[in-house]
Structures are given as C-alpha cells and as structure tokens.
Length: 326
Image 1 (tube, rainbow, N blue to C red):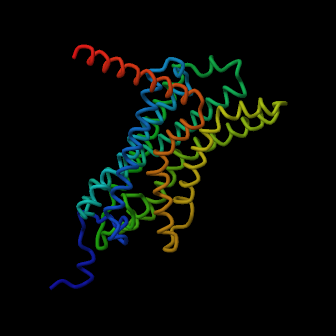
Image 2: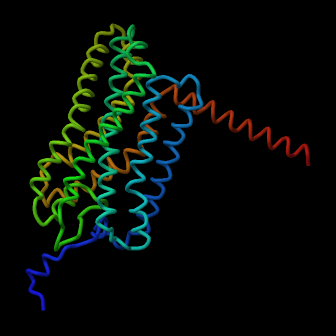
C-alpha cells in the first residue's frame, strides 16, 4: 500500500476546473446566461466587422483598428466560453494538461494583442486630435497594417517564450484549479516545484506585453486631454472628446479589471473576488465593446441604421417580387 506522501507525488495528467462549482443548483441558469452573452458577443462583434468592411466612410484607420479589435474579441471569448458552457451541461470539469496549457497560451496571446491594439487606437486618436495636419502622413494604411501585424507577432513571440517555461513544470498531488478557466496563477500554484522561478520569468516577459502599450495609452490620453482642455468653446471640447470617449471607456474597463486580478496580492480572501472580476475582462468586456462603440459613436450608429434600412428594403423588395409572381 502506498504511503500518503507517495500518493501526493503522483504526476497528474489532467486538471479539474472548479469554476462555479459552489453554485450546483444554478448550473442551468448560468448556462443560459453565458450562452446568451456568448451569442450576443459573437453577433455584436461580427456586425462591427461587417460594417467596417462594407461601409465606405468607415474605411479609416480608427475603424480599421476597431474592426481588428472586434475580430480579436470573437477569438478572445471563444477561448473560454465554449468550454465553460460544455461544463455547465455535462458537469464534466476535467481538462487535460495539454488542453489547459493551450487555453492559457491562447488567452495570454489574445489579451496581449488587445493591449497593443488599444494602444494603437489611442495613438491614432492622439495624432487625430493633437497633430491633425500630419495625421494622413503618420497614420496611413501601410502603418496601420504594420501596427496590427506587430501586435500579433509581438504577442505571439512573448507568450510562446513564457509558455515554453511553463510547459517544463510538472504537476502532482492536488489538481483542482480554483477558476473557471486555465489562468496563469491558479495553474502555476499547482506545480510540484519551480513555480517561483517561472512566475518571475513570466512576469518579466508579461511586462513587455503590457507595460509598453499601457504607458503609450496613458501618455496618449494625457496629451489628448491637455489638447481638449485648450479648446476655448465647450461645444468644441465636447465634440472632440466624443471622438475618443468610447475608446477611453473600453480602456478603463479592460485595464481596471486586469489590474485588480493580476496586480493585487494573491490571497485566499481575494480568490472569489478575482474570479468575479475575471468574468468582467474575459467575458463581459468582449460583449460591451461593440455596444459601447455603437451607442457612443455617431458614425457607427449611422452606418448601422443605413445598413439596416438597406437590408430591410432589399428583403421587402424580394418579398414583393415573390407575391407578384404568385
């Protein structure tokens, strides 16, 4: 018979995602809620992408970045929600170690890309407001493509390097991840040894993925706000601020919840709170982004209204033709 110490050192090959396991009686209602959120996220972001592609007056750098951000949000939410929805229905919370690593890697890449895209969007607004005469020169299609490509390539390289260190860890004994997805800290805390070294290396690499875009975003908005305050008329200030208010709200929500989850100390008292805030930046942020841009952006609302009218008119004409034939 094995001793307890030996049983605790058994190498594990799968994890159990605890998720919302404390709410056993609410699994079906939670499934319905998150399914609705997922469908709305996909549909809302797809609408933004279609509008940016189809509507001519949205073919500008600002909306080019917005279309890329919406594509990213679809990938971002699809990394977490389908697996969560399946666990609500099947009650199967087991996930293989390789699937868990893959989810962590994909999530980290998409989160880092979002940081870079939000920084590119803030830089675009800085040029439009603070240096309007040079805007067309400093922010053309070629530069936009380079910024988007750089966001993806940089995020891929940084997070793949971090992933290589994490993949060297071995896990034994306790295999329950106290989260609804394979997040970094809950996963690393289950490692048999070497967790502190991997945390240090990953923190250094993660700083390259988050600090430069965060500093660029904050710096851009410092200059933007200063420029807006120098505008003499209240109407002018309001009109100028409206061009970047939606993006500022998205940045605040994203970095605010991200800071609460990853910067605050990892204590038992904050575990459940971190799980709640994780829902905000992993599930709700991709949902609210298209809503914020649609509700606070006149050009998007106008494009949506015109596209809706054209869609209805085309279908109305088709129905009328069918009735005439009949």
